[in-house]
Amino acid sequence: MSSQFEQGHEIPVSHQEKPGKQSDLKGPAPQSTQLPTEDGGYQTYKAAGKLEGKKALITGGDSGIGRAIAILFAMEGADSFITYLPAEEEDAQETKRRVENAGGRCHLHKADLTGGVEVCKDVIKQAVEKLGGLTTVINNAAYQNMIEDISDLPDEQWLHTFNVNIHPYFFIAKYALPHLKSGDTIINNASINAYIGRPDLLDYTSTKGAIISFTRGLHNQQISKGIRVNAVCPGPVWTPLIPSTMSEKAQDQFTSPMGRPSQPSEIATCFVFLASQDSSSISGQSLHPNGGVVVNG
Image (tube, rainbow, N blue to C red):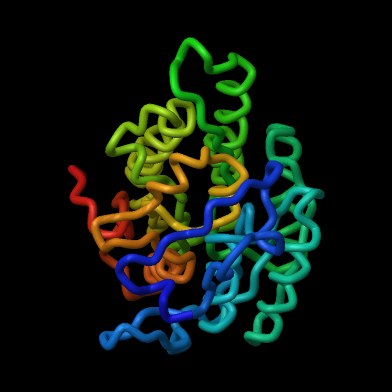
């Protein structure tokens, strides 16, 4: 396991059908709770009760970054309401098991967020009912598919990517806000690609740029109410999106200046920080757990 945090670690090149399942990944499993140590080893995340009493909605929480967020939130004292696609049932159930083992309550909800406003409104309604309120919104669900050139990018894929990656962020935030109060948070999962302009993920990159702008604008609207809005912009991270959406060449080059991709656990700690009072003076900002890539803010 420690090799996943060492320079030179490479993910195994493999392929899956979309949307990808964490349970079917080849090689070492993505880490949800393990973090690197100074001596090149690893240790389990050390909780400190930072999120006691928090009630979090996490979209796309069945695997990858979403699963790691849910588990670390549970370790910190939060309960969660997780949306997932029907095809991700097996992974969702495993996430629920791990969240409950970590001491949190976990409610699962099948939802295709491309269904638009009514689906998103129902997600909020169900989350508030199941959790008994809402304090934290994590917009995390995402879709990507590699296409090398704009001339080959199907119109339908462009529309679908926006319907997954940005439109639900707006609807979820809009209908969650009446349930939030001062001290509560919205955290949007963006990407390094919004800053580097990755050419073979043009539609995905465009939506992630929209998420950054959405985060900044929503922050400027809501900060006077004490509601903080931030984003996290991961770089290469080992999740089911990789074998289900990336070419063999792209997987072979999947690394960072640190000499390895990140693990979901290393991204999830940023969400814990932004959801807690440790980040009380941070809003409208983006964190960059990207393996050492310097980006312009």
